[in-house]
Length: 143
Image 1 (cartoon, rainbow, N blue to C red):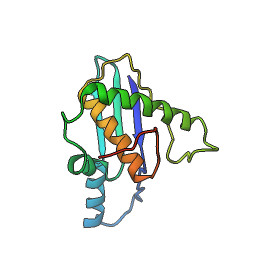
Image 2: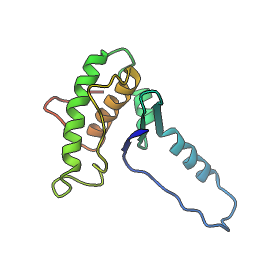
Image 3: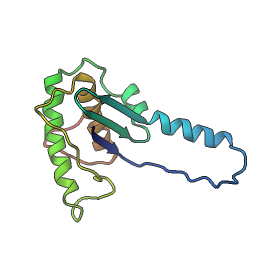
């Protein structure tokens, strides 16, 4: 299965074997981590998209334009442009922050991923550009 991982800041906590009882803060952190991971998979097309970004899930549910606002063709066109630029930056770690551009995205414009995948990838790119003050294309981003 092909995987597409869009990862921002991933917080990994290592707990000692003899750790004390869990605190409420630790429980909230674990819940927040689960809520900030979005996984979309389609086994018949053999792809999987995983978005790991603190704050993205709440942003997409509270700030992003609703599903159906943009056409699927619009989302696909923007995603194609942004994926190309993203992958170009991944290959230039001397020029672009390798902590922001970690992995290439295997987005094939000839595959019909469906509305939901394109919607979430599009909104991740919007969130990423706004949150990290990056510009992946010539047009301005808007939520």
